Image (cartoon, rainbow, N blue to C red; front, side, top):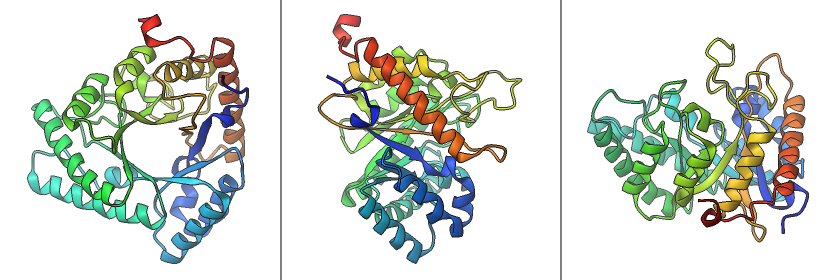
Length: 315
């Protein structure tokens, strides 16, 4: 049986770079901002990257240990900023991307991260299947380095034609990629609820098809109305008028993750929320929004049976 408090069953985390972008750009603010997360017992995971100063890394690592907070490393910002492509048809560009991911793994190890999150390169106009094969090969190469450092590799599905326009931007191509990667348990899927509307998939169908590979989960919202200022991968607050994800969708997602046995009463599964704080917003407001929304969704999840129905019963 699940308890009424969501934090009793989920290792709740936060994507720090999205919530505190100023702190990532200005290291003098980083520890002060990170302390807000580390001192909040609601959180047991922080997802972060961009700490360059060696002394700051050591201080951050010590605070993680004392506060008993786990850590994931975000390699997505490096891939975006440097336009890296692990699935490029150009061998030299693939090699460059692989080397930079090895560098990121080194940084991840320096701050005791137990997972590193990566994404595919840009979408392609042709030779899609070939690009997915190159991507799978590159991921397996990076994974050898990840395993040597005891870091799990998490591959995130994005969108193909809405905002970030990545090669792995559909449920079909995500399945193809993981079928090519094979059974290596150190490479898992990072499934972001907010990306499911952007790939125009049904939440239940997406979880059903992707459940063999789910290793980490993000929750957030997105806007699919092109005329809205937050259209795309903007991660607005839950309840944003044009937002695609709110309490109802979160409760459904929890139920499906329970049926997929990602969420289970006997263990703690990692679920991090990702909200992007704009200059006109306050982090404290977004944190309150996320915590209350997740708790409301969890209560609805419990009222509806807590994921007790199996996939065999449903399908």
